[in-house]
Image (cartoon, rainbow, N blue to C red):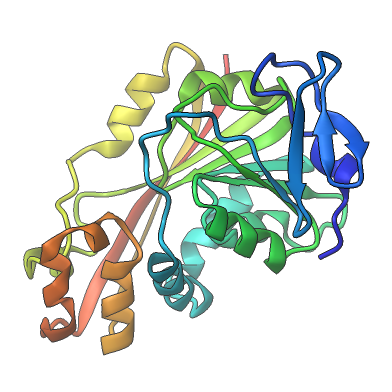
Length: 271
């Protein structure tokens, strides 16, 4: 996609001093205090602060995610995310390859998105997949280099949550859409020992943690059975945290022919 530097800058603030960023050269953003940040010509900028200890997804994990998502295995989740989205400026925190953000943008040409992820490879894929998406490499656990009240919707799909920062970047009438797995999500794969366990009541935990800053608008359960091929089974294991653990190495030989997809989609608004 062609780089739209003013559109990218309109999302961002300086990670050093929090002043708004503006274009100052063909591939440079800067603030009034003289801080400068180089922009990748592919349409994204890294504003990752020094000392981040978290790891972004690897190319292999992203390839596995493409097999699952672009093959339609999670399309009912994407439909629910799209239905929960409001407004025209969509920030996806932990965007990965941008699959859910593309669903949220839909066919409305007025909508545009910022795909934020810790992995530069993921952000590059997200930007490449949509001409209405700009990209930001940043750490969700740090103060976000994003302007206050700039997003109509913040998406957080199977991703870390920085609830105070999401609250700050949301417009006053904006919504936060959070997708978390239920305890039975991909249960047959977990029972086979190929994936990490899921703590029970994750949605309840999110609602409780969010309560000081957000009011719950809706909670939707999305659940269905998914037939598995060898490739899909390997990719479901390989696209997430289980890929970093030795147990995932048994995935290719696990005789599991189907599994249950089961998530909660939470829609919250600012208090």
